[in-house]
Every structure is written in structure tokens, then in C-alpha cells.
Length: 402
Image (cartoon, rainbow, N blue to C red; front, top):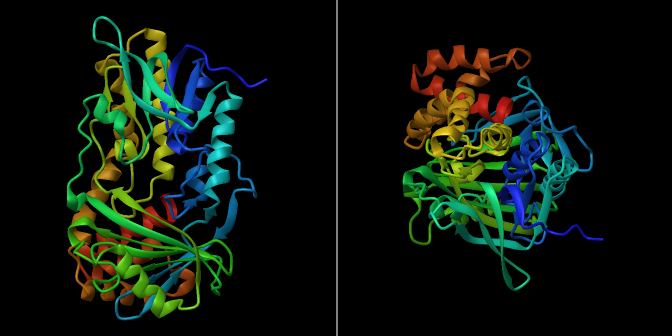
């Protein structure tokens, strides 16, 4: 017997990705009735992600399972515009995920705590009571319109969040704070499956970087993100990615292609009466790397716990639920602001400075090469700017969120 959708839930989460699933889990395990509305036929598709994450980043939220782990990452190689590169192995391990299975595991965990999910359910707006107060969600399911009443609505609907717009939250992004991205999943290549690669330079990825995340020794996610202001007619991320593939992997077979935008400025306003945003909808990503899985899960836990407090207090005002914003800022706000300041310099950095960073790091003995050693050498080579950029990038990408 399929579980029927009730006419009322305490919390309705719109979007079943990591942000929505973790929010639903923490709200449900603390006693809230929770419904997840997922517009696609299953969670985890389409995959708009390089699928990399640090072990320490996700370990507080879910036990590792070989079903959703493609490869264990031991290090990263940084490639400068002049063709030089350096490999780093002393900054913690990571996983390259199979996001379809990983996202489903997160949803299964939420449902094991009492949440309910409905797929192919596309939210189309809010319902309001006679006083004009938000009272529920309208959604379209299998060609028909339905509504469900609730006290709290969570917008976990990604960068294009409609929930934020419906709630009157300013979700606009300036072009310089948006990375335009394209990624191929490729086969028929030969690579080190324990090493991620990152490529920099104005001719490779202006105002961004190009990445390779191995899914096996014969396959990988290879993608690129460039700053929105660098995109020109007929010269965008696809142009640079194809140029890179022709040079480095001319015989690769592309099995999957995806494109989209990544916000690189953290949000500061993601709460309204009865509504909270989480994940990409709240711009909770690393401003430099664009990685957001760990940030989304951290935010989801805080958001879910805030739901519980609001329900206990029977207070769903923006003022009360802004505790979520305050707790987020306390945990990650300083890091996000620092990363954004570095990102602003990063997009203007010359190839000469990128070459200098990699050249400086190569002077460090492999066994001693870690972030502390990198900082000391980079500080001598490029005071202030280079040291901040190098340390910030590697700390976020290798230790915090791949």
C-alpha cells in the first residue's frame, strides 16, 4: 500500500537534494511531520555537480557506503598556465560520489525518521489564508493541481529558487557573482583514480578553474566554471572545455553533459514569515570553489532544528526563524566572507601569479607539503594576495568541500 499524502504537514520541503533531505531528516527526527516535494522522477537527477566531497565534511551526517562512493581521493594536483603542476597528498581524504545513489540515501535516512517524499511533484506557488498569511503549498502532480497545508515551507529548490521569489526574498545574483559551468562525464581515458586535478589560467578558464574528478581509472567528471563577466558570444565555458578536451583527452567518450550556474556570493537574507531557504537557494556555497554539498548539509541541520523550535513556540515569523541565519553565520559566516573577498581577487589574478603559486609550492618537500608549509612559502613569493588565495583555495577544496 503506497503511503498517502496527508492534507497537512508541519513542514513542506521543496527539493530533495542534500539540503532538502538533511533539513527534512532533522525536522522529522525531532517530531515534526514532514513532506518532501521533488519535481524530478527521482532525487539526484540531473547531476549538476562534480560529485566530490571531503570525508570529514559528510561524516557527521551519514555513514559511508561503497554503493555511493566511486573513488577515494587522496590528493590534488594544481596545474598552472605555464604547464607546471604540483601534487599535494597531506590534506585529508575525499570521495567522488555517485550522486543519484548518495542523494537517495540521504532521502531514505530522512524517511526513516518519519518524513514522506513525493516525486514528480512540482511546486507552483503558496496558498494563503483569509488574512493573507502563507498557509501551504500548491503543487502539480501527474497532470493535476493539488495543495497541502503546513506551518513552514523550506525552499531547497536550487540556484533558480522560486520559493525565495514567492516569499519576497531577494535572490538575484550579479553577473560577477555567478559562475557559468559545463561538465562532461567521460570514459575511455587513463588517469590516477586517487588524484583530483585543477587547472588555472586565462586561456584555460578565465575567472574560474577547470576540474577533473576521477570516477575510476578510466572515467571522470571533467568540467569548467568561468566568471559570468568573462562569458562572450560564442566563447563561454563549453568553448574552453572542448578546447581542453581536444588537447588532453582527444579519444574520450562523453556519456553525460550538464550545464548550469553556480552562485559565488553567500546569501545573508534567506528567511521570511513561514519560509526558509537552504543550500543553493540560499547561496550557501564556497565562493571560490563553488562546492556546496557540505555547506548544504550543515545548513540543513540548522534549518531542521530551527523548524522544531518554531513549531514548539508556535512562532513562524521571520524574526523568530532568523535564528537559522544567525546560527549559520556563527558556524560558517566568517569563512564565507573571507572566501568571497579572496574570490574577488581570484577572478582578476594574472597567469603570472598562478605560475608563481605553483612554482612556490614545488619548492616544498613532498613529505612536508601541507597547507601550513604552503602558506609560509607562498607568503615569501607573493605577500598578501597569493598567500590568501592559495591557502584559502586548498583549505576549502581539500579539507572542507571538494
